[in-house]
Structures are given as C-alpha cells and as structure tokens.
Image (cartoon, rainbow, N blue to C red; front, top):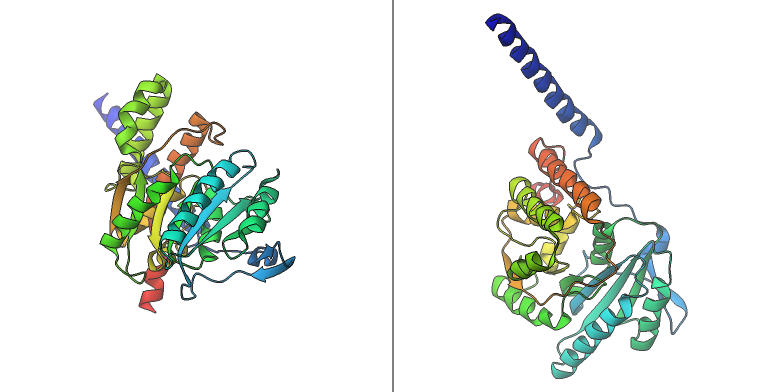
Length: 326
C-alpha cells in the first residue's frame, strides 16, 4: 500500500514538473524579448484644425521643447471627456498665465473609438490651437497601455503626465506630483516618477463597495505584491508623472498594452531602481467605467502572473538595458 502511494506521488510530481516545463517552454517560444512597437502611417500625424493640414508628430527621442505633456487615453469617451478637458485646460491655462516659463500640450489619444471622441477632442484643438491640444487617432484599439505609449512617444514635454479621460482625479493635484518629481529629479535628464495614489481612500472604498468587490480588490492587491510591485500601494491610479528620460526607458520596454500595463511599468521601474514617490490625490469614482469587475480583474490577474513568469525566465527583457549594453 505504502509503495503504491509513493509511486502515485512520484507520478503526480513528475506530471506537475513536465507541465511546468511545458508552460515555460511555451512562454519562451511565443514571447518576443523586446516589444515590437508598430505604428500605422496615419498615426504619425495629427490634424491642425486651423490650417486643415496634417502635421508630423515629434518623437520622444527628440529634445524637449515644452515643460509638460499631458497624455489622455480615450476609448469611446465622448460623454466624459469634455468635463475632464475643461478642468485640465482651465488649470493649465491659469498655471501658464502665472508662470510664463510653464508651457504645455495635451495629447488626446483616441484608442480606436467608435463614437464622437475624435470630434470632441478636435473641438478643443480648434478652440485652444494645435500647439496646445493635439489629437492622435489610433487606427485600431490597442488597449489603454498601448494608447498611453503612443501618446508618450509623440510628446514634447520635459515631464510627461498621463491622466484618465474620466476626470476621476482632480487635475489641480498635478501640483503635488510636480513638487514630488522635482525632489526626485531636478532635471528632465534625471530619472523619476511621481505616482498619484488613492491608497489613503481605501477605508472609504471598503465602506461603500460590496463585499464581493472588496474581496476582488484585496485579491488584486495581493497578486500585485506577490508577482510584481512591492514598493507602491496603488499601482492603478491613472495619474502618473514621468521625466522624459524615464518615459523613454519605460515605454520602449513596455509589453502589456491592456489594463495591467501600469503594473508592468512600475515593475520595470523597480527593477531599474528608478526613484519613485507615491502622492495622495483627490479621486472620485465616475460612472461609465469600461471595466467589468470580475472578468477584468481575472484578466489582470493572469497578466500579472505572465509578467512575472516572462521576466523570470528571460522571455521578456528590458529594452533600455539592451541599449545601454550596446
């Protein structure tokens, strides 16, 4: 009897080992070590509504010519985008008026939107001018991470902020991120990330959320800590500020283009030992989220595991390290 049990355990462990090796082999076979960033020709230009001409976007590899670039990823956001842009542009205009050295641009990235998102954004470009508001229209839906990356690669700022189109984070809290980033990185050539955080609101969120959503939230936070990021409590807040140098390193190495892209960005930052600061921001939940709690978080849980596994076995590598070695 004992011999049979030992043999059974041996066969089970062997089967598990074979399965694990098969998964690793499959991951290594299917994954490309560095992201293949494709850009359609029509995505290389933006429309200037005043001249009715298309103009080529600059490159993140160029030297900066503005103080701040704000990247707003938008997928079917015709309803929520106007209030966000109104608050954003009012704040930036006021800041610019008070400090002539402060210059900015807002890049709205339509992620294959099927509604009037592009028309709404072009209305702001026409009102404020293409020097201040530009619209990048992606041919197909890439995912939020893909949209943010395309905006970053097209930006002119010394510092680059991405902000969600729903306006859930109060835009004037940019000042808090700016102060935190300057403490980490006095110049744009230095590395640094200031991360908007809702961690201080977690107790309030638990009080208002259902038990099921609370369990999902804690489960996701545990998986983030287990597989990826341990120094940042809130990885998912859509309000993050990067120096230009840091944006170059991270967005050329980013593989994940869907919801878990924030986690990979911060995972890369931790591995590269880039300075980071988590900054409490004001945040209000806005109706119209594209996330469905269970299925979206299940997908993100899978993505977290795959991020960890692919970097662990060397299937994914960091592009900025490759450039440095060359």
